[in-house]
Length: 253
Ligand code: MF3
Ligand code: CO
Ligand code: CO
Image 1 (cartoon, rainbow, N blue to C red):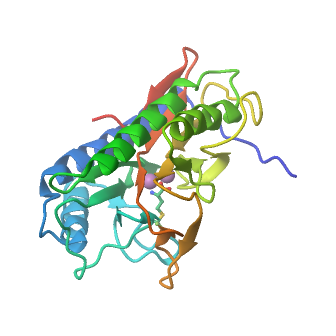
Image 2: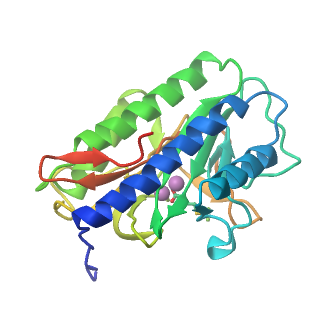
């Protein structure tokens, strides 16, 4: 297997990633109060697009490999890459992941959170809480000299200890002026394996955690990834930089 080089970003470049990341986080903060029963995923998309433009940025997903909308909205059994639609109305008890990636001064800020629509049932609350902790367990494994497998191992151990499964088919990714690049960051794996982390690497960690099987399938629209058993899936994502001291989360408001 060929090992592609991983770009190391300078302090100046990381500062640009931080600006993009902060805008991405602020966009999720802006959208959160609109996540209510009766709202369509298209309305969330349109609010996101207008807010992004008003802040002098553009939406990376729009037109990316033909993706038709500005954000991804993944409801319940949708694992990722849900396409906003005027026909999709949020209902009490749904969970929805909103994944945003504004481009600011050519750099990408990629972050997502899973929100509750009204009051979730107990299992949904647990799934979402465990998934967020999985993200932070993964982040805590990041420091110079650690290995990519340390991240996945930490996430997988926590998810499976709580009876949930880790999606294999989608992984975190290097990100800079390019949306998706080396390295790949699986959310499962073995500690001590994989590529070594170095200060200046910037990538996402974005675990997708399922109630049932980890297996996914893609719907006929070519994008929407759903669980094979149609049980629910949750996801949280941050863009992080490896620093001399350890790790910096770039997608904080
Ligand atoms: N933001 C997603 C990620 O975390 C990618 C979305 S690509 C799109 O990598 F085309 F579906 F928008
Ligand atoms: Co994303
Ligand atoms: Co991403």
